[in-house]
Amino acid sequence: MSAAYRDVMAHVHFELTHDFDAPPQVVWDELVDWKGHEEWIPSTDVEVHSPGDEHGIGGEFTAWSGPAPTTSIGRKLSLEDRMRVDEMAFDEAALSGFCKVAKLGPVLTGWASFTVEPLGEGTRMVWVEDVTVPYAPPFTAPVFAKLGVAGFTFGMKRLAKLLASRN
Image 1: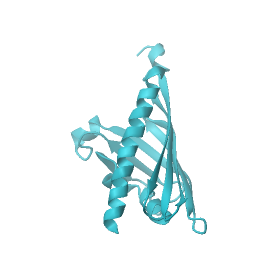
Image 2 (image 1 turned 90 degrees about the vertical axis):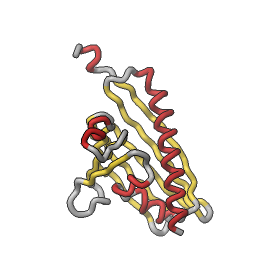
Image 3 (image 1 turned 135 degrees about the vertical axis):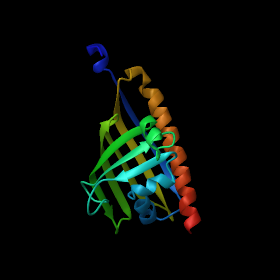
Image 4 (image 1 turned 45 degrees about the horizontal axis):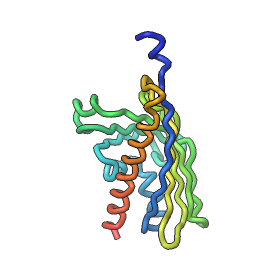
């Protein structure tokens, strides 16, 4: 591969807000259940690598998203997204929380975060992604951002339905 392509990458940044009819602690618990993401993020398989408290700072996990990510062939065709929890705190008195994970590659590098805070009887969640995509020309970043927003919006709607079905 030529040097001209080796340094090409798109910087993708997006933010989305979703309001839930569930209490902040319930939404928080679901968001930090990394393995549980399989239930509401379409075509995703998650493997938690951390011994001990997988939900704490330093916890590592990998998500594969794509066609049939639970099969060996599907995994090869899926996006591998390795992550590590760098910040995590939930304030029970304020019913608000913040979590930030580092994106470790091999494709996406950068970070993602989410916050939850009370909104009436429910919860407002804000999700932010700030990643680079290697070998993607910079002009593709807005397309990747729109796809990211669409995918996470769909996932948040599925999460809201999941939480509603548990009540």
